[in-house]
Length: 115
Image (cartoon, rainbow, N blue to C red):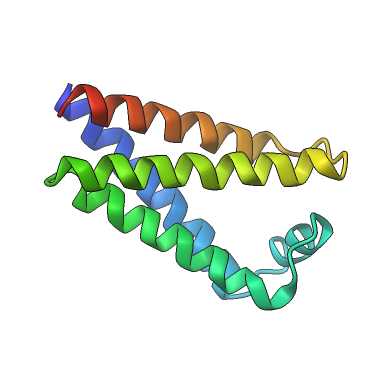
């Protein structure tokens, strides 16, 4: 079970890191979508920092399970919020956020089960 937890946590941490890099570098494919769902431009870096904290927490959580559980809960809430932001404006392109939310739930369940 711990191997699955490790694989999922590392993969999710990598996805979060790349997502954060896109936000911090103001990638032209990322910023307009965030502004479309109502995120002010000055708040975008804060979303990136939250993703980086989640990624770090998932990795540290492989050694300290309470941190891993807390990080996974935070990542789940982050992506549920992203899905809600898309649905709120009736944007049908919420599949990436929903997929990552499911992936975060899997990471949370695996982290709890392998504690």
